[in-house]
Length: 48
Image (cartoon, rainbow, N blue to C red):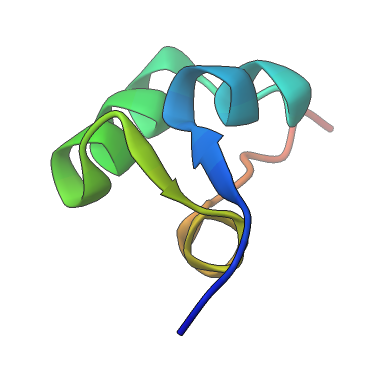
């Protein structure tokens, strides 16, 4: 299953994820993962 590889750090910054969520993604995938995997597994917290 191909796809563009992203740095988890860059992905977290681009999508404004919390440090906690960034760390969760790092534990799941390591420092690099496909864009599809990151988008499917990222959780955004509601600020409102």
